[in-house]
Image 1 (spheres, rainbow, N blue to C red):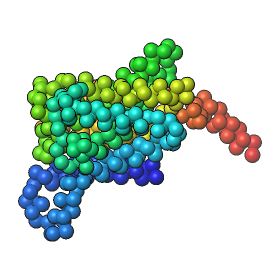
Image 2 (cartoon, rainbow, N blue to C red):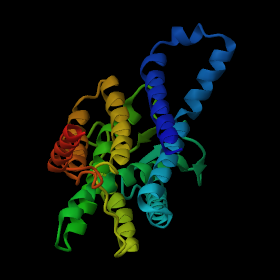
Image 3 (cartoon, helix red, strand yellow):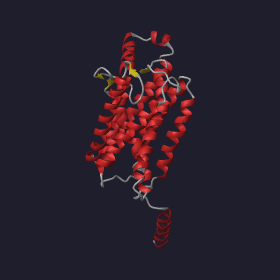
Image 4 (tube, helix red, strand yellow):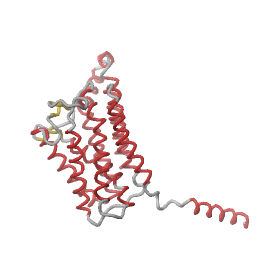
Length: 294
């Protein structure tokens, strides 16, 4: 089920890329579709964003329940959804902490007429993968400040995703939200990224405190799923940004997001069940001796 949900999530991201970067810029192709094709295209444009975020949240929930257990997963999911929703409602109402912005259509039903219900889900699933990768530093540390470092790393990976995603989603052919307060970073205020760091760090801190002494320790094999989830969403944002002619944020995202994410995953301890190279050599030598004796 986990692999199926992740596969559906990746397929929905690819479908969205094709629709937004190829189909939308070619209206003549859309006009040539039969009536059933036009209905399918209209449905996909109206619900594609909902599909990829719901499938991403489902993949993260299944992945989290396997890696963390249901109890620890809920200790992350509830603060992530609750704090991010509160932050988004506050932001769309007052401009704090992100700046003055508002959501358009295409991302599903809006809670209080302001925030699509899918937005807190995206905070949850990208936030979970970001935090689990950021915690690699925690596993090798010995001092208490390493918890703060892991939270900051996780929040940075989450924010780096937005470096790339936000410009494409506001300045692309089909915008999904808009900024009423212009700023120096491709039309958005720098305050936005402070809000992302603050919100991400807040729910990651809440999860860390709720976990208490029951902190998860994950190896490289176990972290492959969170890495794939992060990379898939980062690649979607990257291709959307570059496809919309917005290149500079992609470089910043690679420097602060994708590169560190892969590096953290690689620095995690390998699968403890996998034999080491000396063990493999000894096993091969024993196999040869057994074959010779036989």
